[in-house]
Length: 473
Image (cartoon, rainbow, N blue to C red):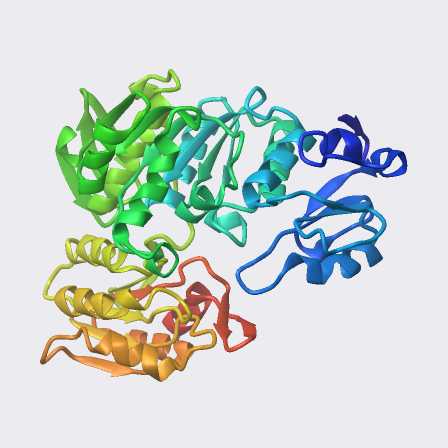
């Protein structure tokens, strides 16, 4: 590997030394300046790795990649013949990650990695950790839901971004680690200094098949050789299981560890080990997120007093219990909650701040072509903790929106007051128009997202912007 003004360059023979049994001299001398698994994004000099997806075979896109200037192609199929097409038996995402590691070199020696996994809280915890460390003079990058198409990017993008963070001066990176990334082996050869477990509740069961499989995937982050030290939420039943099964040393935390706890609509006050904390976040779920972040940073050698000082300037995360505004004593929030547990945590947090007989009005839906088992459970949670709901579209994708709504409504208990409005803009506008003084409007499901997917069309759409317009009226 060598670096030029354009980035990393490596000989194909060096890159494939551990994977391909034979290369011609002309193939081996090819310079590779990047790795890609998406033929649409190939640029001249890239190695195109023709992975098989759930629907399409990667070999279908080899000609496209070569036409765009790919230096060479790696394929699992020996039936794909052609100049600069190299066969790597058993090609997988794990092998892809090892190729990318070979390309960029040992990243573990150049950046401290903090991996955060769990059903909910990953985004808030990674951004909290990034903020605290940066405030304490150790620049920390963040990789996750807010700055990529996937929670944990595919290996070529992930390692490229880590390499860029180091080049830009980051000493560490707080990364959201998804169960699917762990299961697929996207993180091969990365060693995390700290692994954090937030919680685990039903989600992504369309992929994992069962809650047990989902947990087993998360558990992989806490194996020897994957992480050095763990921080685990023992308020979660799966966290308590993890404490017993983890192969690495760890500490655990609980919301019961704090004293002098006070939640307000402006934030959370508490004391931990004699140190007073304030954060501009509220709700018990955010207290858990704060503790996860505090204990993770503490394991890197920082004092609690300094961590408390850094947290005071944290302003929150886009789309996570984000206040849109207040008008006529009506507060409007957007939140990313799109699972039963996340909805319950957010609704409980908001109910705790109600005053003078105010109500919670909720706008929500459920994504299409995703885990169908959670839809009626989301309905049950909203019926239990909200006073009124408008059920609407939330990226229905290729599914019939009416069928999604039907599944959600099946979870409503008798007598619960709700309406159905599939036009999400109209649903948000109606909820805000119906709100009375002291009410809270929660627009749930999309949070930071700036699009709506209906059939094969992705259209610009922001809950925050639509709510801001509606509130101004």
